[in-house]
Image (cartoon, rainbow, N blue to C red; front, side, top):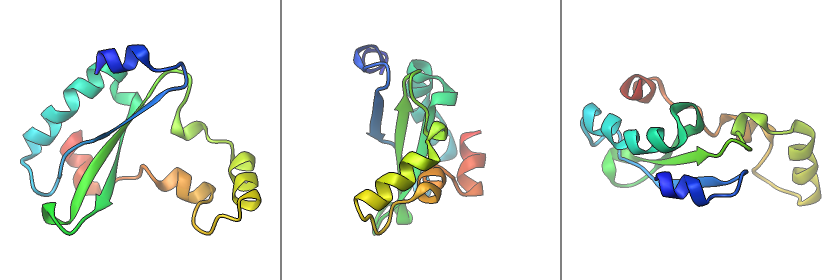
Length: 111
């Protein structure tokens, strides 16, 4: 993961399949994040959950951000302009900001 961080552009983002949090032991989930935290820091590593038909209903993906970009720095006006210009039916600023919110059980698991 450190090599991935090294070769990314200053505003680079790494996305990687992570773990199935409801199907795995909490310690396994925590250990799986160590390489990401070591390479990108805990503050720059975000997880998001994907509903599935397997893995007890959820899988997770990790997004790791370089120093030049952060999901919380989204420009509201730019997001809304994109939504209007492209006539997007799903995406908006609220969806963008909520994409990385985690359920309480998962927050407790990874803390």
